[in-house]
Image (cartoon, rainbow, N blue to C red):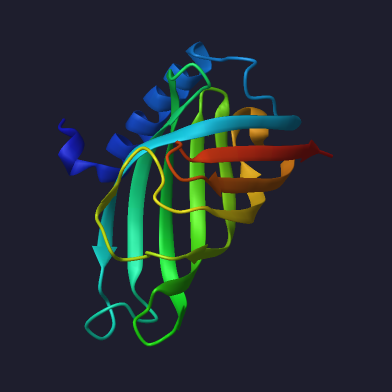
Length: 174
């Protein structure tokens, strides 16, 4: 029997294997209740120009970046989908997007959704590890898995020029 013949079984097998790996790597660095900070690294982005040519409402960015602790150790991955809902100014320098973010950590995943403000939404396919401009966005934690299944709160993304991105998790439990 080949997994290709049973795509759902193959997907479930891969997800189960990932869950086992996450359970073995469990850590207390990222508590399900409380505040902690994780740093971003360089990321890859797939821009989808779905509407008119150029940056317009309906365009999307799908991305992924490694997450690191304060010592620079890789501790997880951050994946997201951003959909442009508004562009300000004729040249689209400022963009408002709706984001769905998933932060995968050793003890589970944290899901967050909300509105993000970007100055350079579709200008590049990669971003260096350090930030070119200062900005800050916060979005709501909408759920999670594993240790974070009952967590609520927000994730603040802080960008400071010349420094790695910071993701500040402010989690509350029931």
